[in-house]
Image (cartoon, rainbow, N blue to C red; front, side, top):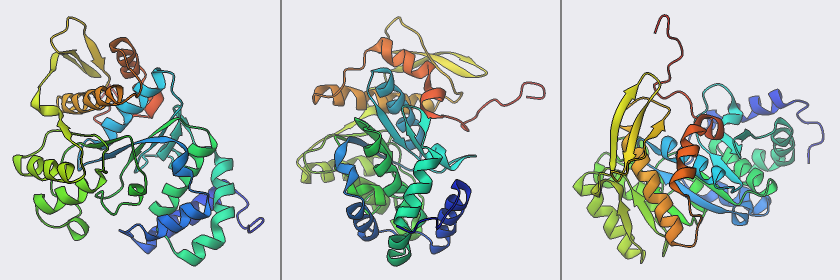
Length: 309
């Protein structure tokens, strides 16, 4: 440990941000070393792994809030942040502590200087260490880039989720939907169930083949369009599930969110079928009401002023 290398939270975070100059490291070498040095904390909690070009932050946030409202101590790891670095790492809706960040950076400083990991690799190791220390039972982990060689893909989750797939990060993932799908499908693990959102027929075929090779299956949430939007407001919309008479409210505008809700519900269904938590519709409704509080869910068509709108 470098005692007193960083005297404050601010200086520690500035050091982390400086690591961004090292660029993106798209392999698992550095994260494997970092986690070994910290005692492989990712093995101390169950995880749900979420990848996708669009929607992964929304699906991760919905799943996180549903688990919290079910009485489960839950971690959430997302990126990027909007205004505060600590938004990336939550336990039961509360930011990672400044004290933990300062101590982690000080303790790992020598190793960081030697290994030369990226900003995201260090942040991932920090998140897993924090979830372990805080005794999280489940952690919802969002990938940073792609899937197969993303730093987060060191985990063995209880559920893999792929939201949507389109052209992104072509310098790392390839220039076609096929190659990008294969990279994101790399989070599917042997014998671990998977859920996917609205995808092209090409992506569905590739993911089904990957799942078959891994002796598992993938459930496509758009095969059954069971979310019906009934009323829209300035700050969200009401919807029904499976034509049930109950109306639910999602606190963010955008009809596309119906796809993310459907994917999250399919994920919760599979968790229940595999001895995971049983999230009732009543609890799910409460989790949407508390979505912003539990998951710090902001910045998606958020209404920030009414006059002027």
